[in-house]
Length: 129
Image 1 (tube, rainbow, N blue to C red):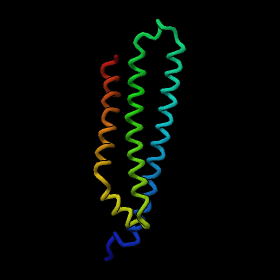
Image 2 (cartoon, one colour; image 1 turned 90 degrees about the vertical axis):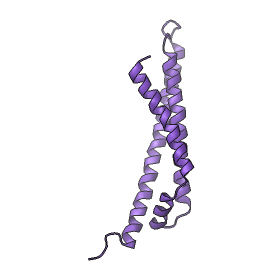
Image 3 (spheres, rainbow, N blue to C red; image 1 turned 60 degrees about the vertical axis):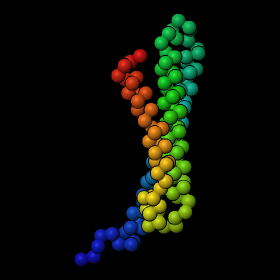
Image 4 (cartoon, rainbow, N blue to C red; image 1 turned 90 degrees about the horizontal axis):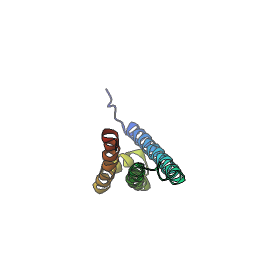
């Protein structure tokens, strides 16, 4: 019986992994753009409303921009990590090896930048300022 993980299969797996990771981060950049336009629209509407109707909405605006800033930072770190991983390998096997040995400081910074997104978002849902 032949092993399942042949060299050819491992190479194809690496190529599919590279394509899927790239697609994930392209979609992540699209969500960054959507968040930007949503926050920009919210800011425009905020300044167009009268001052008495603005009461209590500033915290939501600030939290939205903070979520955008932290999410964009994490997305940029993830995209830089992906480009770093795609730059050197020439086949799928090398990509999988590079993906496994990717720099840990980028992973740590990405997780650190995504944590405030969830803390702020859940805080808004739970405490309803």
